[in-house]
Image (tube, rainbow, N blue to C red; front, side, top):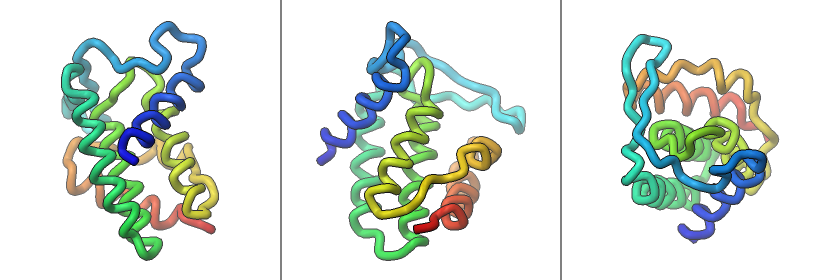
Length: 145
């Protein structure tokens, strides 16, 4: 199951980034960004991407499979989204691929799509607990079956 999820993520990247030479490939350099708060956020080192993704997907699958209600589904999706953003596995297309992956997972549980513009507006601060709380609240409101 873990490999299937990883392959799905890579397939989405190949599809979305089909016109780029690194479609379906992990980034090969270390990167960081400056959050809207001004804090410098370092993403997973390029050498640790695959391992980090495997750990993320393993935890997500456990949360996902045990989710019994909308709140638990929202928590699992928030964890997945935050993890994908924190790892930042690709040189380009992380947000687009992450959104497509999240939407595919939500569709599996019978939920309609999310408001991508609203998701883009969520402030990621690099403060894990607060960011996960904000994302969980966002997805709780967004989940409509």
